[in-house]
Amino acid sequence: MASNVILVLNCGSSSIKFALFDAAHQSMPRAPLWSGKVQGIGGPTPSFDLAGQPPQPITLDAEHPNTAALALIRERVLAQLQGQRPAAVAHRVVHGGQHYFAPTRVTQQVIDELRSYIPLAPLHQPFPLKAMSLLQAQHPDLPQVAVFDTAFHRTADPVEQMFALPWSAWERGVRRYGFHGLSYEYMSHALPERHGDAARGRTIVAHLGSGASLCAMQDLKSRATTMGFSALDGLMMGTRCGALDPGAVIYLMEIEKLSLAEVGRMLYHDSGLLGVSGVSPDPRVLLPLEAGNERVRTALALYVRRIVREIGALTAVLGGLDMLVFTAGIGENNAELRRRVCEQLGWLGIQLDAEANARHDAVISSTGSQILVGVEATNEEWVAASAAQQLLAVNG
Image (cartoon, rainbow, N blue to C red; front, side):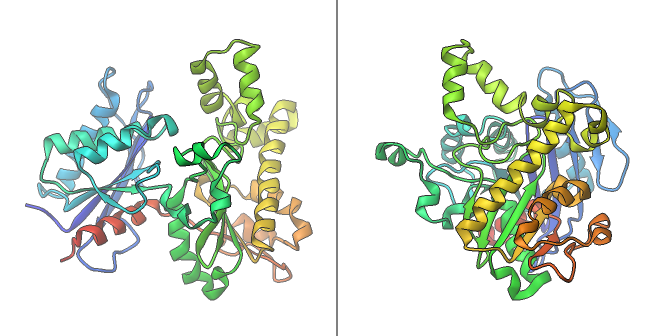
């Protein structure tokens, strides 16, 4: 028997986030009924973490840890629903390629086509597809919906989606797709609720987490973004390099003789804050160490500078700036990095309220600031659940 609950799965290589949402009414509540994550998948100390509770150490099959983690989540979800199955499962999929922009009912053909995009997002794309295939085999009558991170940026001007490559590359799908679309889609709902029509103006949202990007929005739609063909482009991230001269890649392969696999590992796993600092990809670890470690200081300075530089570029695209909003794990919770970014943007007329920033208030700019600066928690899971509800008309 099916419930009126939608399960959202956000599957990565080392963690799987899950959330249950009440779809009994057309206006779905933002807060999940139940949520958590399995993290440390493939590592020595995996855990099952429920929201608001201490992590529970777990043991996963060493040969198939992702499959084991999904099985554990399935078991716990069924227990939480007292034996009822979810009405549907929504999957966050990072890359929809040239063909998938709207939420899509999952079929074997869809899975096969999405698998062809794995090279475009190797850290993210394989894992929701594995979950889809397993659920399809175990519960063939359970509706599944794929929701795409690239979809939100389809409203960007075509020149923002193009590379200056031969036209045939554009026709083959080599273009700037942009990512973190579910997060920015949530901002398009949350910001006007909090700030009214001001949110429809020239807004830049900074999604700063282990992955990071910026989105220039106007009238609540994407006009430009910093990530491009892959999730490597744009800002410096925890372990990813961000924008890079392609000549550097040619040099690494031709002169230093790094293999394709070695270059891929360097750019995705060994660069960013981790690569420059040599210590950690996490600013919470790095900030207390910077006074005594020059590489850590350099890493944090570069991280901030890349954000500042790209905000300047996107401000030019928008023709000015009315609102700057920080979101995601670092953006929502790291007051010091927000302060450093905004300090370097003082030329725009940004002034922070130090106490509001320290409290992570919804508005952290002072009354004299020419630009509103805000902090807004993102909710990608709700966006995915809402998309599934609308596509499948779960609430009848």
